[in-house]
Length: 183
Ligand SMILES: [Mg+2]
Image 1 (cartoon, rainbow, N blue to C red):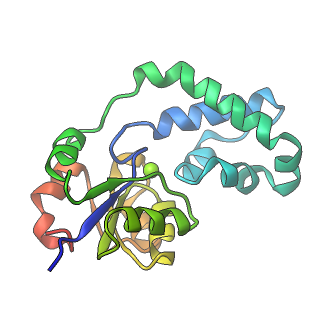
Image 2 (tube, rainbow, N blue to C red; image 1 turned 45 degrees about the horizontal axis):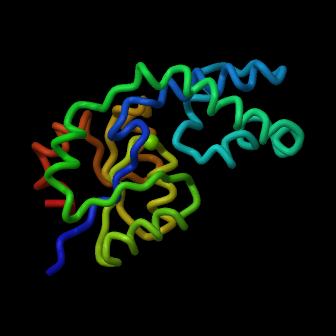
């Protein structure tokens, strides 16, 4: 039996970037005349930038300012990236799982998840992610999600979005791997 591949989300799962991205989006929107509560932005982190703007500001605003605000977010995030650190356990996990793991950015669309599964060999796979968008994308691609709390989404939110299990951190996940399909 082939090992179950882990499809690893990056932002908020391996690297502690969610709040940096939230602030970068806040500044980018603000530069374009739209002040949004940071908590609302944070709830959309993990969604692709191509979808996040419309989800927060509406289709019309997106068609007028979307490209500019996405570019501004890249610049504002670039100013913060020096402060970004890997999350605890990320290096160990990446070292241990080099044979079965694949790293892919995700969004609610299942196509990226399916592409990652294919890259990992096309067998059985499980998503490891921090956001409700990971759970949603995985579910739509027919995968289970194991959630971690490091992105700032609660266990209840992740479970409601379809996560099979939620762990506080990567070290906790690694310690209790036997309780997941990744064992
Ligand atoms: Mg994420």
